[in-house]
Each structure stands twice: as C-alpha cells, then as structure tokens.
Image (tube, rainbow, N blue to C red; front, side, top):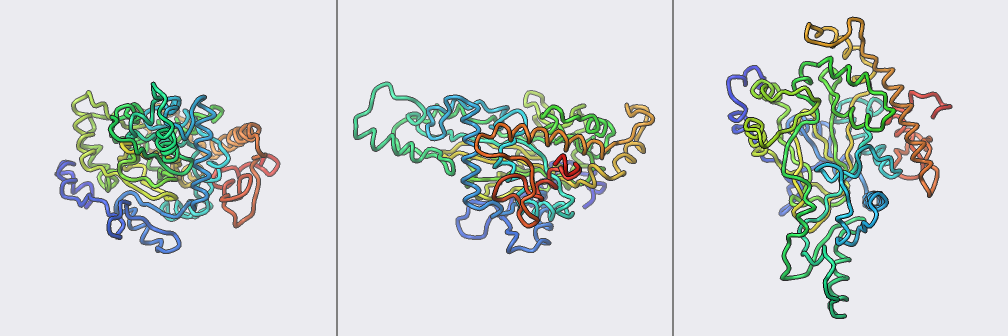
Length: 453
C-alpha cells in the first residue's frame, strides 16, 4: 500500500495491522532468526525477504577459523588499548573503556589487518551485491569499528577478587571453571558458582534498549543539498571522516545498507541489534506524522525526557525485535529502517564488527545527486549558485587518505607488512597477507594509479 493511501491512518494503526513477528529457523527449538545461505538459497529469495522485511541474515559468510581469528584480533586490540584488560579474567573487564553506549572499541575506524580482511570477504561482497542489486565491482564498503558486549550476568565472585584466599580445592574447581568458561577468544562466559548475587556485572550494560536512525529521514527523502554539501566537504585527513560519512546519505545517492558481522553465536539475551521490521515501507508516513521531531542533524535519536520523543520511541520499541544470529553470519538492513540495540543480560559475550555498503556509481560517479541538489535549490538552502556535487574528487580524496591510514597501520604492525597488494582475482581477502584485488575495489583504492597502490 502506498504511503499516500496510508496517510489517512496514523503510524500506530498501520503497525498494529502489520505482521511484525520476525520468522525464525524452522528446526524445532531454534533460537536464531531465519537466515539464508548463498550456496543453497536463490538470490531472488534473499532479495524478496529483504524488500519485505527491511533486513536479511546471511549465514556461513565467515567460517569457524575466521570467527576464531577475528575474536582473537578484537580482544588483542582491546587489551593493547586498555592496559590491565585480560579477556579471560572478568575481574579486569572494568579496564575496557568502550566509546559511547554500544560497546565500541574506538572513536574512529579500526584498521586491524584481520578486520580489513573481513571487510573484503568474498561471500560478504556477494551478499551485498545481491541486496543492493548491483555488481560486485560497484559495491563499496565503509571503515568502522567493532564491539564487545561484556557478559553482565556472571556471579559477582567471577568479577571481583576474593577478600580471602579460597581453599585449595575451591581454587582448582571454581576459579579454573570460571576462567575456562569466561570469554575466550571465540566463545563466551559462564559461572558455576552458586549463592552469589549478580549485581556487579550490571555496570557493563551498554545503555538502555533503544532505536534510532543513522541518517536524517526528512533530509533523506528530500535529497537535501545540505547533506550533499556536507559529504562534499569531507577531506578524510581526519580518520573520523570515515565515520561521519556513514550518516551523510540522501535518497539520490541510491540504496545504502548497514551490517553486523557476527563472530560468536548471538542469542536473544546476549544483547545486540534490534530492528523495527518493515519500517522502510512507512518512512514517508513516519516523517509526516513526527515532523515535529525534525532537527538539523544527520541522524535521529530520541530523548526519553522529552514527551513526544519518548512517545515515538516507545511506539517503535513496541514493534522492534532482537535479531539473534549464528556465529559467521552477516545481518544486513536498509539504512532507512529504524534499528537500535538491546544490552547484554547473559553470561556470554557478544563480539561483532560493523560495516556499511553502498553503490559507488550512485554515491560518487552519478550526476543524479548533483542534479537533484540543483533542482531542489530554493531560498532556504545554502547551496552556492555555482556549486555542483564533486563526487569523483571526493572519491579520490577518500582513497588517498585511506591508503595513508593503511600505510600507517602497516608500519605499526609488528608481525608482518600489510601494504595494499593484489592477492589474485579469485581470492577475496579471506586468507593470506595484504589487501586483495576485491578489497582494493571495495575500499575504492582502485581510483589511485598503480604507483600509489
């Protein structure tokens, strides 16, 4: 039903009539959301599901070894950045200084060798190509961060040093069991202690259950020239520009998707992404009904202390669903789908990596964005009279500064050189050193001449 027809009903009425309960795997007792396998399922099935629900889960994108290696890389980065942190000792977890309320590893993008290889994973590129409905050669990806949601429900004794030394038998049975079941590089935590409270771990909770949009939905629909000017002004000399670009999206830039690469089984109570399914169908309705929430910022969040904002978020949270997924899976959702996170309330850790993807043609090389901005110029806009969106110049700046950051990361790599290099047409950067030919394309480095690459 079109948004014009729906305009006679409010969003609450519309959502109440939709089938919003997400489908799960068919096997009895499964706790994971329905997923697709690129080697089994037809591409058309994947696209149909994505277009209906606004998200899709692709399983078996990363194999067990890749998951194990990635978890080790994440913990190693976190331990190096947070002195005193030890992955297998929950008593040290307070040392992990995450950025913001999402357990983020850093303020800016992380250029770890393993995480870069994940961003150029062959199966992931194939999945993104299917969902974006473009060629793999046209797909580009972002550079972002990873997250660790620490287990919050262990017994207090797992998190705190004992005031008195336990008896020898207790040490061998209890302490070793805690260490063995607390998060290793690949799995999660559990405590067999009994009778202790479970309050201490709550300090690791990553904020409240929430939803948001990583773009301004009103500017998105209007193809706001302010966003295009903002994108055009990114120099990428500051690594933070690679984070800022994620929000600078309008409809004339074509489809954009956000993704979570998941590396340990992520059950409902382990915390993680929540989605308001089918929200993309009603984005026009939402923007019309809640236009009083419009703000001049490139994202939409809700302040629970403001009545109308809380009312809106509560409505969306009422229809939001956790998307529990298996290790090695890729969760993809349309960037105009309201989404958020739910904190960890379990004895297991969550380890995941973020990435965004989009069409190179639509964002950088198409004239449509510039033409749309000029068409929409009016008295209220700040678009200079002779301004045109310089997408290719921006792409060149992005590539040059990304290469500089990758070179700097390579210099800091104590194990082996990590300069961008071709590893072969058929190898998608899943194994081996360096950045694959596919990775060079996905990162946009191919716009540089061979001497620079």
